[in-house]
Structure formats: structure tokens, C-alpha cells
Length: 215
Image (cartoon, rainbow, N blue to C red):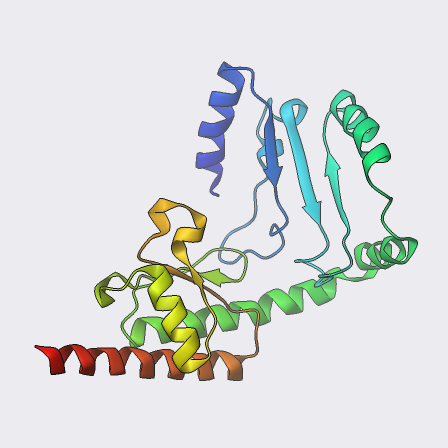
């Protein structure tokens, strides 16, 4: 989110004395702009609960390690619940996370550069095969429109999986406004992305031919 958007949210939170829970697990995976935390907005540090983890920036998916930061009174209250309902993170994960924080940011920069190339590849590819797509500024997902196909998001995803073995997520999984869109993840090799684009293109062309034949 842009700083201006965060400032508007901060104003509402201040006016109505609200707490903000801010999930910033993708903070390192940003493009064309610098990530801004809402906790950095004046007056928001004391009313923000900051959440992050190691699965995205350090590619530590499966290590099950994250953290929360916020006002001491809130963190202390969270700890009272957490320590009696959860086991602690494994020592192996904690040592790995410490190493990531001390030595891993050079590799994070390399990874972000690679993701940036994949981002351009998939966005350009989707647009070329007829799927309008916003160019994301963070994470590793795109959200192209499939509205012109006349299929629902779920129909499109199911048929694409059955016919071309390409797995994408229906947009309505993220709310009613996501209907008519699909989510594609580009946390895959460039070769795999290119192959997926070819299969989606084939799927779309076959649909066009079928519609033309029924007219």
C-alpha cells in the first residue's frame, strides 16, 4: 500500500481509537517502490500490532516461524494466551531465522531481482494472450481478468486444470469483488511460467473456437 493510503487509514484509527493489525510478511518483496509500514506513520507506533515471518522474504516456507511486535501491554497479553495454547517454535527454526537475519539479506536482494523478471514475464505474457492484468508492486501473484471469456472464476480454474493441468486460484476465493478474475503465482521458474502461459493461451484459443462453432 502507498503511504498516502496508510495515512488515511491512520487517520481513521486515530479518530476512533482503533488498533491496527498489520501483516507485512511481503515487505521485502516489493518492486518500483519502497515498502512503508503503517507503524512508521506518526502516532501509529503505539497502536499497531506488526506481524511478519520468514517464509516469504527468506524462502523459509515450512519452517513455521513468525513474530509479532507491538505495545508491550498487548504483546504481554498475547503471550499469556500463546504460551498455554501453543508449543514454542523449534530451536532449529529459530537458529535458521537468526542466520537469515544476520547473513541473508544479500540473497533476498537477488531473489527479489529474479522475481521482478518473472513478474514482467507473466504480466506481459498474460496481456499478450488476451488477459488484462495489473502489474503488481509486491509479493509474487498476479490477478488477471477472465471476464471476457464468459466463464465464472471457478469454471475457468476447474476447466483449465482438467484440460491443461495448470493450477490457478479463482478470484472469488478472495471475496465477491474477485469474481471474473484468477490469481496466478509466479513463484516458479521462468521456463515453467512460459509453459503455463502457452497452455493458458491454448485453452483460451480452444474456447474461442468452440464459441465460434456454436454461433
